[in-house]
Image (cartoon, rainbow, N blue to C red; front, side, top):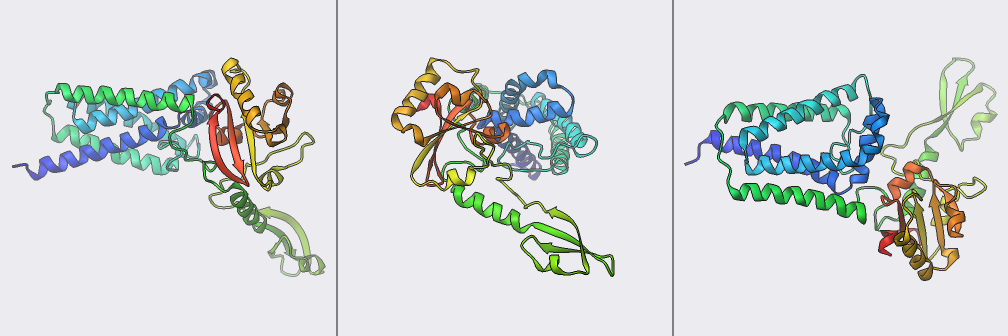
Length: 351
Protein backbone atom coordinates (compact mmCIF):
# COMPACT_ATOMS: atom_id res chain seq x y z
CA UNK A 1 0.00 0.00 0.00
CA UNK A 2 1.37 3.41 -0.95
CA UNK A 3 2.15 5.76 1.93
CA UNK A 4 0.92 9.35 2.16
CA UNK A 5 4.53 10.49 1.79
CA UNK A 6 4.98 8.52 -1.43
CA UNK A 7 1.73 9.87 -2.92
CA UNK A 8 2.60 13.44 -1.90
CA UNK A 9 6.08 13.24 -3.44
CA UNK A 10 4.66 11.86 -6.67
CA UNK A 11 2.10 14.68 -6.85
CA UNK A 12 4.85 17.26 -6.28
CA UNK A 13 7.01 15.64 -8.95
CA UNK A 14 4.18 15.56 -11.48
CA UNK A 15 3.28 19.18 -10.73
CA UNK A 16 6.92 20.25 -11.11
CA UNK A 17 7.25 18.33 -14.38
CA UNK A 18 3.95 19.71 -15.69
CA UNK A 19 5.20 23.30 -15.25
CA UNK A 20 8.30 22.47 -17.31
CA UNK A 21 6.19 20.67 -19.91
CA UNK A 22 3.83 23.62 -20.28
CA UNK A 23 6.66 26.14 -20.35
CA UNK A 24 8.58 24.16 -22.99
CA UNK A 25 5.51 23.53 -25.13
CA UNK A 26 4.38 27.18 -25.20
CA UNK A 27 7.88 28.10 -26.37
CA UNK A 28 8.15 25.26 -28.91
CA UNK A 29 4.89 26.11 -30.73
CA UNK A 30 6.25 29.58 -31.53
CA UNK A 31 10.07 29.60 -31.66
CA UNK A 32 10.20 32.96 -33.44
CA UNK A 33 8.13 34.50 -30.65
CA UNK A 34 10.42 32.89 -28.07
CA UNK A 35 13.44 34.33 -29.89
CA UNK A 36 11.93 37.82 -29.46
CA UNK A 37 12.04 37.33 -25.69
CA UNK A 38 15.58 35.94 -25.95
CA UNK A 39 16.65 39.01 -27.94
CA UNK A 40 15.14 41.25 -25.26
CA UNK A 41 17.20 39.52 -22.57
CA UNK A 42 20.39 39.62 -24.67
CA UNK A 43 20.03 43.35 -25.32
CA UNK A 44 19.24 44.03 -21.65
CA UNK A 45 22.42 42.21 -20.62
CA UNK A 46 24.52 43.93 -23.34
CA UNK A 47 25.05 40.66 -25.22
CA UNK A 48 24.24 42.08 -28.65
CA UNK A 49 26.94 39.90 -30.22
CA UNK A 50 24.68 36.89 -29.56
CA UNK A 51 21.55 38.35 -31.17
CA UNK A 52 22.02 36.29 -34.34
CA UNK A 53 21.91 33.18 -32.15
CA UNK A 54 18.59 34.15 -30.54
CA UNK A 55 16.55 31.67 -32.60
CA UNK A 56 18.82 28.63 -31.95
CA UNK A 57 18.86 29.57 -28.25
CA UNK A 58 15.04 29.76 -28.25
CA UNK A 59 14.74 26.31 -29.86
CA UNK A 60 17.28 24.82 -27.45
CA UNK A 61 15.52 26.37 -24.45
CA UNK A 62 12.11 25.02 -25.49
CA UNK A 63 13.54 21.57 -26.22
CA UNK A 64 15.43 21.33 -22.91
CA UNK A 65 12.42 22.48 -20.86
CA UNK A 66 9.96 20.11 -22.54
CA UNK A 67 12.33 17.12 -22.40
CA UNK A 68 13.28 17.86 -18.79
CA UNK A 69 9.59 18.06 -17.88
CA UNK A 70 8.96 14.64 -19.41
CA UNK A 71 12.02 13.22 -17.64
CA UNK A 72 10.73 14.47 -14.29
CA UNK A 73 7.21 13.14 -14.88
CA UNK A 74 8.34 9.65 -15.94
CA UNK A 75 11.00 9.68 -13.19
CA UNK A 76 13.95 8.75 -15.38
CA UNK A 77 17.46 9.00 -13.85
CA UNK A 78 15.69 10.39 -10.80
CA UNK A 79 18.37 12.26 -8.87
CA UNK A 80 20.44 13.34 -11.87
CA UNK A 81 17.32 14.78 -13.54
CA UNK A 82 16.30 16.66 -10.41
CA UNK A 83 19.80 18.07 -9.99
CA UNK A 84 19.73 19.39 -13.57
CA UNK A 85 16.27 20.85 -12.90
CA UNK A 86 17.54 22.47 -9.69
CA UNK A 87 20.43 24.11 -11.55
CA UNK A 88 18.09 25.24 -14.34
CA UNK A 89 15.58 26.82 -11.94
CA UNK A 90 18.31 28.40 -9.80
CA UNK A 91 19.86 30.14 -12.82
CA UNK A 92 16.55 31.52 -14.00
CA UNK A 93 15.59 32.59 -10.48
CA UNK A 94 18.67 34.81 -10.42
CA UNK A 95 17.89 36.15 -13.91
CA UNK A 96 14.28 36.98 -13.03
CA UNK A 97 15.35 38.63 -9.77
CA UNK A 98 17.67 40.89 -11.78
CA UNK A 99 14.86 41.51 -14.29
CA UNK A 100 12.54 42.55 -11.47
CA UNK A 101 15.06 44.90 -9.86
CA UNK A 102 18.19 46.35 -11.49
CA UNK A 103 17.56 45.21 -15.08
CA UNK A 104 13.81 45.64 -15.69
CA UNK A 105 12.58 43.76 -18.75
CA UNK A 106 8.78 43.58 -18.53
CA UNK A 107 7.07 40.33 -19.50
CA UNK A 108 9.58 37.53 -18.88
CA UNK A 109 8.33 35.20 -21.62
CA UNK A 110 8.67 32.09 -19.47
CA UNK A 111 5.37 30.82 -20.92
CA UNK A 112 5.86 32.45 -24.32
CA UNK A 113 2.90 34.58 -25.40
CA UNK A 114 0.42 32.12 -23.85
CA UNK A 115 0.56 33.49 -20.29
CA UNK A 116 1.84 36.94 -19.40
CA UNK A 117 3.80 37.15 -16.13
CA UNK A 118 5.68 40.04 -14.61
CA UNK A 119 9.30 39.47 -13.50
CA UNK A 120 8.20 39.46 -9.85
CA UNK A 121 5.47 36.87 -10.52
CA UNK A 122 8.04 34.76 -12.38
CA UNK A 123 10.55 35.16 -9.56
CA UNK A 124 8.10 33.87 -6.93
CA UNK A 125 7.05 31.07 -9.27
CA UNK A 126 10.71 30.05 -9.51
CA UNK A 127 11.10 30.25 -5.73
CA UNK A 128 8.16 27.84 -5.39
CA UNK A 129 9.77 25.49 -7.93
CA UNK A 130 13.07 25.65 -6.04
CA UNK A 131 11.32 24.64 -2.83
CA UNK A 132 9.60 21.74 -4.58
CA UNK A 133 12.76 20.39 -6.22
CA UNK A 134 14.74 20.66 -2.96
CA UNK A 135 11.98 18.75 -1.14
CA UNK A 136 12.03 16.07 -3.82
CA UNK A 137 15.81 15.70 -3.58
CA UNK A 138 15.85 15.55 0.22
CA UNK A 139 12.84 13.31 0.77
CA UNK A 140 13.40 10.82 -2.04
CA UNK A 141 17.14 10.28 -2.03
CA UNK A 142 17.19 6.83 -3.60
CA UNK A 143 18.24 6.45 -7.20
CA UNK A 144 15.59 4.60 -9.20
CA UNK A 145 16.51 2.25 -12.01
CA UNK A 146 15.35 3.58 -15.36
CA UNK A 147 13.60 1.30 -17.79
CA UNK A 148 13.87 1.17 -21.57
CA UNK A 149 10.30 2.48 -21.78
CA UNK A 150 11.21 5.59 -19.80
CA UNK A 151 14.22 6.24 -22.04
CA UNK A 152 12.10 5.80 -25.19
CA UNK A 153 9.44 8.19 -23.85
CA UNK A 154 12.07 10.87 -23.20
CA UNK A 155 13.61 10.42 -26.64
CA UNK A 156 10.17 10.69 -28.26
CA UNK A 157 9.57 13.86 -26.23
CA UNK A 158 12.88 15.29 -27.46
CA UNK A 159 12.03 14.52 -31.09
CA UNK A 160 8.50 15.86 -30.62
CA UNK A 161 9.82 19.18 -29.28
CA UNK A 162 12.26 19.55 -32.16
CA UNK A 163 9.53 18.61 -34.64
CA UNK A 164 7.10 21.22 -33.26
CA UNK A 165 9.81 23.90 -33.44
CA UNK A 166 10.76 23.00 -37.02
CA UNK A 167 7.13 22.83 -38.15
CA UNK A 168 6.47 26.31 -36.77
CA UNK A 169 9.58 27.66 -38.48
CA UNK A 170 8.65 26.19 -41.86
CA UNK A 171 4.94 26.99 -41.71
CA UNK A 172 3.22 28.88 -38.88
CA UNK A 173 3.00 28.35 -35.09
CA UNK A 174 0.80 25.38 -34.20
CA UNK A 175 -1.02 27.65 -31.74
CA UNK A 176 -1.23 31.40 -32.31
CA UNK A 177 -1.40 33.31 -29.00
CA UNK A 178 -1.08 36.75 -30.63
CA UNK A 179 -3.85 39.31 -31.32
CA UNK A 180 -3.67 38.73 -35.10
CA UNK A 181 -4.69 35.07 -35.03
CA UNK A 182 -7.12 33.53 -37.52
CA UNK A 183 -10.72 34.44 -36.75
CA UNK A 184 -9.92 37.85 -35.23
CA UNK A 185 -12.17 40.69 -36.37
CA UNK A 186 -9.42 43.29 -36.67
CA UNK A 187 -11.81 45.95 -37.94
CA UNK A 188 -13.90 45.83 -34.76
CA UNK A 189 -11.06 45.12 -32.32
CA UNK A 190 -8.81 47.93 -33.54
CA UNK A 191 -11.71 50.42 -33.72
CA UNK A 192 -12.83 49.60 -30.16
CA UNK A 193 -9.31 49.92 -28.78
CA UNK A 194 -8.73 53.24 -30.53
CA UNK A 195 -12.06 54.54 -29.23
CA UNK A 196 -10.96 53.65 -25.68
CA UNK A 197 -7.61 55.34 -26.30
CA UNK A 198 -9.41 58.51 -27.45
CA UNK A 199 -11.52 58.45 -24.28
CA UNK A 200 -8.36 58.20 -22.21
CA UNK A 201 -6.93 61.42 -23.66
CA UNK A 202 -7.45 64.04 -20.98
CA UNK A 203 -6.98 67.81 -21.09
CA UNK A 204 -5.17 69.14 -18.02
CA UNK A 205 -6.25 72.58 -16.82
CA UNK A 206 -5.15 74.52 -13.76
CA UNK A 207 -7.69 76.32 -11.61
CA UNK A 208 -6.31 79.88 -11.29
CA UNK A 209 -8.02 80.40 -7.95
CA UNK A 210 -7.06 77.22 -6.10
CA UNK A 211 -4.05 76.10 -8.15
CA UNK A 212 -5.64 72.66 -8.43
CA UNK A 213 -5.24 70.66 -11.64
CA UNK A 214 -8.45 69.41 -13.23
CA UNK A 215 -8.95 66.84 -15.99
CA UNK A 216 -11.41 67.15 -18.85
CA UNK A 217 -12.32 64.92 -21.78
CA UNK A 218 -10.59 65.81 -25.05
CA UNK A 219 -14.01 66.54 -26.58
CA UNK A 220 -15.00 68.96 -23.81
CA UNK A 221 -15.18 72.53 -25.14
CA UNK A 222 -16.46 74.28 -22.01
CA UNK A 223 -13.05 74.08 -20.31
CA UNK A 224 -11.58 76.30 -23.04
CA UNK A 225 -14.24 78.97 -22.42
CA UNK A 226 -13.80 79.11 -18.63
CA UNK A 227 -11.67 82.19 -17.84
CA UNK A 228 -10.78 80.71 -14.45
CA UNK A 229 -9.00 77.77 -16.07
CA UNK A 230 -5.53 77.78 -17.58
CA UNK A 231 -4.51 75.08 -20.06
CA UNK A 232 -1.51 73.01 -18.91
CA UNK A 233 -1.07 69.83 -20.93
CA UNK A 234 -2.59 66.79 -22.62
CA UNK A 235 -2.44 63.55 -20.66
CA UNK A 236 -2.68 60.30 -22.59
CA UNK A 237 -3.60 57.52 -20.17
CA UNK A 238 -2.70 54.05 -21.41
CA UNK A 239 -5.47 51.60 -22.28
CA UNK A 240 -5.21 48.56 -19.97
CA UNK A 241 -4.23 45.35 -21.83
CA UNK A 242 -3.95 47.17 -25.15
CA UNK A 243 -3.27 44.65 -27.93
CA UNK A 244 -3.16 46.91 -30.97
CA UNK A 245 -1.44 50.01 -29.56
CA UNK A 246 1.37 49.71 -32.13
CA UNK A 247 -0.81 48.62 -35.06
CA UNK A 248 -0.38 51.15 -37.86
CA UNK A 249 0.01 50.79 -41.62
CA UNK A 250 1.47 53.74 -43.52
CA UNK A 251 1.28 54.55 -47.22
CA UNK A 252 4.08 56.05 -49.32
CA UNK A 253 3.19 59.57 -48.09
CA UNK A 254 3.39 58.53 -44.44
CA UNK A 255 -0.37 58.55 -43.81
CA UNK A 256 -1.87 55.98 -41.42
CA UNK A 257 -4.19 53.96 -43.67
CA UNK A 258 -4.77 50.97 -41.38
CA UNK A 259 -8.43 51.87 -40.76
CA UNK A 260 -9.08 52.35 -44.48
CA UNK A 261 -7.54 48.97 -45.31
CA UNK A 262 -9.55 47.21 -42.61
CA UNK A 263 -12.80 48.80 -43.80
CA UNK A 264 -12.42 47.40 -47.31
CA UNK A 265 -15.09 44.83 -48.12
CA UNK A 266 -14.27 41.41 -49.56
CA UNK A 267 -10.96 39.59 -49.56
CA UNK A 268 -7.55 41.17 -49.75
CA UNK A 269 -4.13 39.61 -49.35
CA UNK A 270 -1.56 41.25 -47.10
CA UNK A 271 1.85 40.07 -48.29
CA UNK A 272 4.02 40.49 -45.19
CA UNK A 273 7.70 40.85 -46.03
CA UNK A 274 9.95 40.80 -42.99
CA UNK A 275 13.15 40.04 -44.88
CA UNK A 276 14.22 39.76 -48.51
CA UNK A 277 17.41 37.92 -47.58
CA UNK A 278 15.61 34.56 -47.81
CA UNK A 279 14.23 35.15 -51.29
CA UNK A 280 14.76 32.12 -53.53
CA UNK A 281 12.83 30.22 -56.20
CA UNK A 282 10.48 28.63 -53.65
CA UNK A 283 9.51 32.03 -52.24
CA UNK A 284 9.17 33.52 -55.73
CA UNK A 285 6.95 30.62 -56.74
CA UNK A 286 4.70 31.28 -53.75
CA UNK A 287 4.41 34.99 -54.58
CA UNK A 288 3.57 34.20 -58.22
CA UNK A 289 0.92 31.75 -57.01
CA UNK A 290 -0.60 34.47 -54.79
CA UNK A 291 -0.66 36.92 -57.71
CA UNK A 292 -2.53 34.37 -59.83
CA UNK A 293 -5.17 33.96 -57.11
CA UNK A 294 -5.70 37.66 -56.40
CA UNK A 295 -5.77 40.72 -58.66
CA UNK A 296 -2.92 43.18 -58.12
CA UNK A 297 -5.18 45.80 -56.49
CA UNK A 298 -6.21 43.26 -53.80
CA UNK A 299 -2.62 42.50 -52.75
CA UNK A 300 -1.02 44.87 -50.27
CA UNK A 301 2.68 44.53 -49.47
CA UNK A 302 3.28 45.19 -45.77
CA UNK A 303 6.94 45.59 -45.01
CA UNK A 304 9.66 47.35 -43.06
CA UNK A 305 11.99 46.78 -46.06
CA UNK A 306 11.87 49.78 -48.41
CA UNK A 307 12.65 47.89 -51.63
CA UNK A 308 9.96 45.20 -51.25
CA UNK A 309 7.26 47.10 -53.14
CA UNK A 310 9.58 47.85 -56.07
CA UNK A 311 10.61 44.21 -56.25
CA UNK A 312 7.07 42.86 -56.60
CA UNK A 313 5.57 45.78 -58.50
CA UNK A 314 2.71 45.92 -56.00
CA UNK A 315 1.22 48.58 -53.74
CA UNK A 316 3.58 48.89 -50.78
CA UNK A 317 2.88 49.94 -47.18
CA UNK A 318 5.19 50.38 -44.21
CA UNK A 319 4.71 48.64 -40.87
CA UNK A 320 6.90 48.72 -37.78
CA UNK A 321 9.25 45.72 -37.84
CA UNK A 322 8.17 44.39 -34.43
CA UNK A 323 4.47 44.80 -35.25
CA UNK A 324 5.02 42.97 -38.55
CA UNK A 325 6.71 40.17 -36.61
CA UNK A 326 3.64 39.88 -34.38
CA UNK A 327 1.34 39.77 -37.39
CA UNK A 328 3.35 37.19 -39.33
CA UNK A 329 6.01 34.85 -37.94
CA UNK A 330 7.28 33.81 -41.38
CA UNK A 331 9.93 36.00 -43.00
CA UNK A 332 7.63 36.23 -46.00
CA UNK A 333 4.01 35.26 -45.46
CA UNK A 334 0.46 36.19 -46.35
CA UNK A 335 -2.57 37.19 -44.28
CA UNK A 336 -5.94 36.93 -46.01
CA UNK A 337 -8.33 39.60 -44.72
CA UNK A 338 -12.03 39.14 -45.45
CA UNK A 339 -13.96 42.33 -44.62
CA UNK A 340 -11.64 43.06 -41.71
CA UNK A 341 -11.51 39.49 -40.38
CA UNK A 342 -8.32 37.41 -40.43
CA UNK A 343 -9.31 34.42 -42.58
CA UNK A 344 -5.94 32.77 -43.22
CA UNK A 345 -2.27 33.09 -42.26
CA UNK A 346 0.39 31.14 -44.09
CA UNK A 347 4.01 31.06 -45.11
CA UNK A 348 4.15 32.25 -48.72
CA UNK A 349 5.73 28.92 -49.70
CA UNK A 350 2.50 27.17 -48.69
CA UNK A 351 0.30 29.24 -51.04
